[in-house]
Structure formats: C-alpha cells, structure tokens
Picture 1 (tube, rainbow, N blue to C red):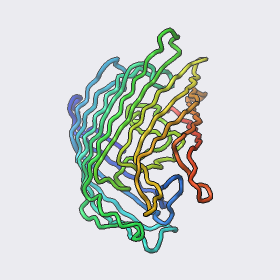
Picture 2 (spheres, rainbow, N blue to C red):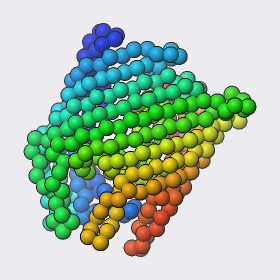
Picture 3 (cartoon, helix red, strand yellow):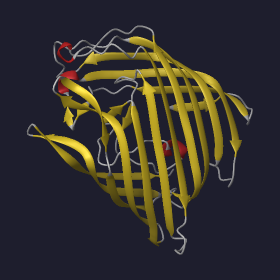
Picture 4 (tube, rainbow, N blue to C red):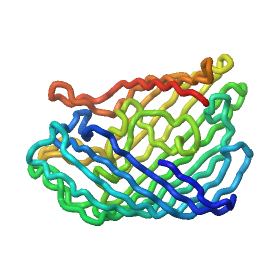
Length: 318
C-alpha cells in the first residue's frame, strides 16, 4: 500500500492511495494446517483511493512521533482464475468492482533504540472499513455449500503497544506489552483479517500487524481475533538485543467437522525466543524461534496440536 499527500498543507492534506496485490500464482486456504488445494485460486486486487488526512507532531518529537487520521474512499477490482489443482466443480468467484470507505488512525509516541525497536513510550491505532462489491454471486465447492455472503461487509480493528523499563533493572532492560483485536460482519476469504507469523519491528504501520507465532504467512483468515503479547528484551552488548516473548491469542478458525468445514473459536498460547542485532554495511538481522501450543497441523490424516516455527529477517538501511 502507498499513501501520498497531494497538498502542501502540513496539518490537513488531500490524500491519494494505491493498494495492489497481483501474485502470479494460485493461493490456497489452510484448515488445521492442511492446504485446501481443491479450492485454490489466482486472486488479485488493485484499488485507488482519495480522501483527507490530518497530521500532527506529538512527543517526544522524533520524526516518526506523529498523530495521523485519514478517511479515504477506495475503489478498484477483484479478479480471479482457477489454479492447477482447483476442483472442476468449484464455482469461481465473480470478477467484480469493489468500493469501500476506510477510516485509519495512527498515533506514535515511542522512543526507539538504535535498531528501531520500541524502547520507551506508546503507540496505538485503529481501522474501520466498510466495503461493497458491485456484482457478487455464490461461489465455492457445491459439496461444501456455496458461500453466499460477502457482497457488503464491515470490519474494525485496533492495536496498542507500550514499552517501559523494569523497576530495579538497568536501562538495558525493556518490557514491551501489546494487544491487537478485530471483529467484522459478513467477512469472507477476500475481506477477512489475516493472522500469520512475521515481525512487528519498525514504524507504527508495522506495529499494527497481527502476529501469530509459528503460523504461516497470512495462514489464518478470521472474522474475529484478539492477541496479547508481553516481551522482555535485554541488551547484553551494544547492538545486540535478546528477546523472550509470551503470546495469548484467540480467533475464530476453520476446522474439519462432521458436516464439512466449520468455524470454531480457538486458543493459541505461544512462547518466542530470539534476538535482533545490527550488522556491518547498515544491515540488521532478526531471528526468532516459536512454539505455539494451540495451532493444529494435519499429519498423515491425523490432526495434531502444537507447532514450532522460525523467523529470519535481514534488512538494509539505504
């Protein structure tokens, strides 16, 4: 996604946005860790938006310490095609025009350390989205029951992050608490919230991402979720930060039931250990190993609970 202020006013600005996802391969959903190849789709989207934004500096005064509020009207298209493994009986979703209203709020009052990790302060934000599709017909596998909703939908989400010291310990120690939550109505595969592994290291837009340790990238599509994280970070030497994090997460997830795929609430407690460090040539590296005790996986037709995962990221500052 790219947002550009198109006016010179530093407090209130006209805003233009462009959001696109056009991958040259088919994607599948996952149920209890098992890929649903019979329903895979090439699914692409692109939209343009225009609107108004209010922007202001807040303490402690760094370049990323701002309050942003934006309201945009976004219009674009969704288009679909079958993949190599799509069931011949699968009814493809209708290529459609979509328009939506998007209210976005971000506030950042964090002090960050030398590798841009939150050190002290807070950040928070919220999103509200209402969408409508111009032409939308039932789709899916007839044997599972066609999906009939999704032509008009509503979604709301919010997050908060607080970073502080630990009483009695040195400045090298940081405690970071965060919470994310979202809910919506009439959400489907193409409008649902996405939960997956990754990193929240960086600016307030990155902090707004919902991370579920040990899950695949955007693995879980859900209409309702809540996560709480508590991370303890310690700097033993300059440029190296050791991290230990506990996660509690809840979400409505798809599962195999007696009558086909059903949705049920799930709990996903997890623990993560890792480090972040600076490297020569303006490089930074993040490594994390996670154990999620609630995520399920299907092995030889059996559903097993518990999954381990690893995350590695190397970035460069230009």
